[in-house]
Image 1 (cartoon, chains in turn yellow, red):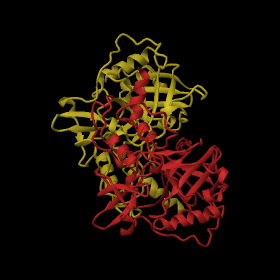
Image 2: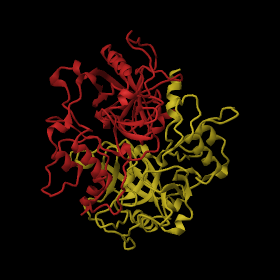
Image 3: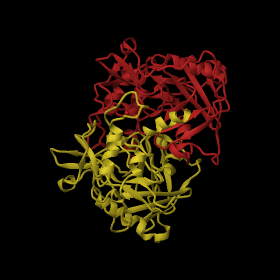
Image 4: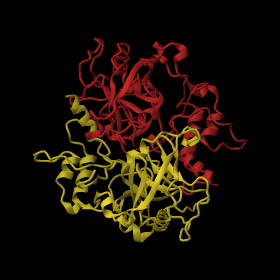
Length: 301
Length: 301
């Protein structure tokens, strides 16, 4: 009986990453996200382009990041150039603030940037990107419309025809000063409740597909705003690589549920209206950042 | 310059717990939460009642939890009775699911419950509690109204006159099976994006005031739904105590900003409308679970 309690809570979870789905129950109507994923056709999944995928290698494992090349093409190009110049290798995590962000960059400012790296402002994208936006019917506090763009959570303004990525858990952004330009040499990942007030204020450059727990469990920094202080043991970055530069056998096999698939629509329906008997009150709504974005590692860890 | 970048991000953070505020800048208009807190009168802070405060003692430190006695009086009473019967002492964290919850309970079901512990359903409270609700002007996806009740984030339905606590980061709830009753012997804390779909489906019993990072950094369980498996090192619970049962010198000095204070209203205004030059786009809104609920430890760690 107690396990049911856990199951009840689990059904409500924001599934960030899923391993191979468990065997589907033989039921007339699938009622869990796991059921839906287990019954999904292969065509509902996509393999991210390895040329737009980063491997952030930490001592305790690999964080897989998919780059958002449509909204932040300059940043994506910069970050790949930086990775290929080994810019990030041997740097360290410099900040972990609870319920907020993990941040990494060269605090010494000594490392040269490759010549192709140019600062830019990529907070929003224009109508051509907005045309590919998949709108949700759900309301939002921070955007007139919310939905998905190339699989990333996003907002859109139908009046200005602009579109932008949303600061949900696991999203990766480019830290910046004031003025607004950034290069991608300073990076952060969201590890807490969605800080949506940052939307349209920072360039989001991608999202963590796998290995999120390697970032979210890092010791919080004891300095102001979660910065690590000298007395704290460093969390070194072994390397950051573009997946396509890594020999194929060493790559992480990964598939992402397509947000334009029938399976994803079923997942959304299942999560918006909760018909499981455990739910005594049906929320009838879903927040953009509570939508599960399933990832699986076929045949992998 | 790079530090400004960090500062910009920090200004936007959901401040969960603050140490002693840094010295205020001499400015005509305070622009940061730290400024507002540093300039706040003592009367804007309250010391939680030690008889409604729990100390969850882990090997790596103390988690301080304030009980929500108005919305969940039976659960609060149960949990205090359980703590006083040493029910939780020597149990362990059984589940840590990334972006969701940490959970602890007696998985063996062997420990007897004290006779005063009775199961109950405390998902919502009635009009007398609702009358103490402090409404925010902000919209919400999951509730008709949102605001605060005794300092806890809450929702209210003006038609039914019911009020309930909201599943924000750091909130603590009572796990349950199906049917809906729970005792508080199974507990969880939210460590991810607010799972608001659980609102009115589980009894929330309090929130973590201090030590949240002791829970949020725990290794994620490798079992389904984040359950720890046998091969994983246990995370024992040394004890759970009611603060008033702990000798005064061993208590954690703690103060919480009153949500009915002028300082809190200023914090809300500052966070809803972002006038700092770093912000290029003013969100003009705030999500209930992004409202900072400042806590300080006067003279303490």
